[in-house]
Image (cartoon, rainbow, N blue to C red; front, side, top):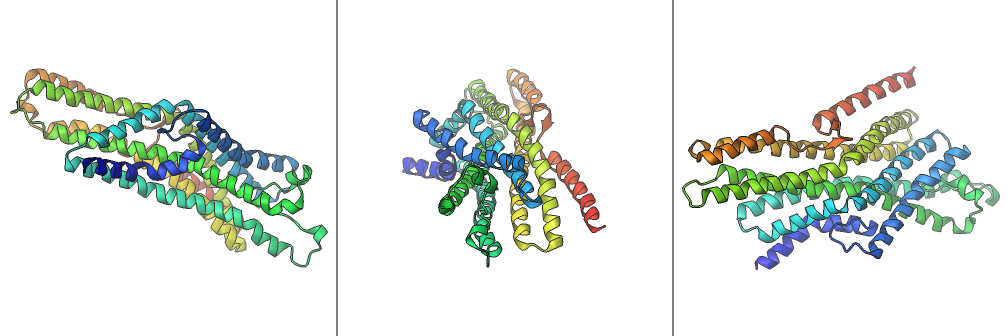
Length: 394
């Protein structure tokens, strides 16, 4: 019975994330062999299409203003996706250690209350996963369907020689330059659409994978806090039991630091790109609103929502991790610490000192990613868009 419950908990906590990142070879619990490496190379190549083709299109200068915005957005998203695949492979041990720790936590859990806490954080991980991937996939679907809608709209009553072919990834001039046969138009559209979905997995899927294990660490810290609050000094082996809790605290700090060290460079690049893209896509939305282009409005709105969702999730979960680490001191204060032996009280002082500098997500080791950072980015972006809106109206 316990084994079945353990399998059910594990499946509930990690299965959706495995489905997203296994195809691109970064699933932490896989066997890291030549086949996983080939999946990563395949994912990088497909994601690279979303970077190389728009760059060539911009260089050849055959895109309009709307397509220029799409090219910049795809270049940024594709670069982030490639970077995350490579980075998650380079720092694979950090994720492997954390996910193996999570498996062990589910295997050894016996307390019903603690199991409920772990399930709650796994549920939050799913709540994050669903809208993040839905926004990303819907955006990809919009880009995949746009060529077919444009084909019927633009090429009505046009001779076969004058047909204008559009693609999910702006690449018309590039493919014409390489003499891609028009008979393979639908196949090329499907390949590019598939590349967009892989790009979404590499970008948003890796974010969901990372944030899910971060939430698990937050759940373990919350359980640790309950252990401090309910510590019973009337039982035997007081020193050994308290030392076990301290060792657990040290272990969780180590796991959290591994995650923070792994993501700091990615966060720096991601904050930079998202800040730029929010302004660019917001400007595109204002233009679409002015000319009443419903398709462009929907497309830019969904892309902006996906970017905002990524930024919000990192900010809120980074803030949540920081709060959980800091609240350990408060949990000790809620216990009967005044009755503890002197030796234990000395150890408590060191715990208090540790909580003064909690583990936080930082972009490049100098920008703390929390709710305050999110608010600053949003305020700057909206200020910029307000100026652009006034310029459009004049």
